[in-house]
Amino acid sequence: MKTSIRRAQEALVAAARPREQRHLGASSELSSTDNDVNELAIWASVGGWSDLWVFVFNFLVMIPFANMLGETTESLALHPGGGLVNATFGNAVEVIVAIFALKAG
Image (cartoon, rainbow, N blue to C red; front, side):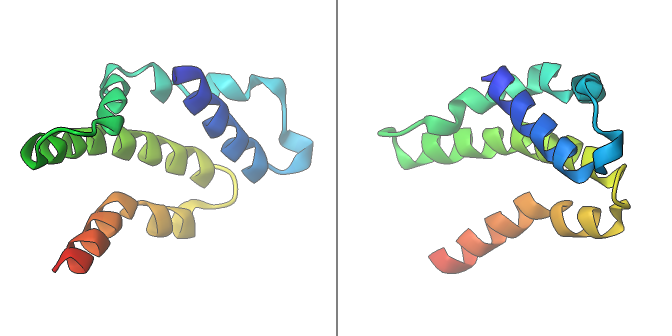
């Protein structure tokens, strides 16, 4: 699981980097996938349990996903200029939770 997350982050960083600056050492920039907090992401697929446990585990899973999104946003912000990137993706988890809360009433 860590390798797929790392590959996704490397692809995002490589896509944001100007062509002449792309190199194979991009993986050294992204050390966030080695964080122990990211191991909580395995609970993202909890299903068939009571509503309380699904809520608790999904709440805990937001921690590593917010961490991954924050690290990816910071990596992207280094290359094209980060104001818009940070403003757009900096609060993505909160926006998603708010949308689902509004839909649920």
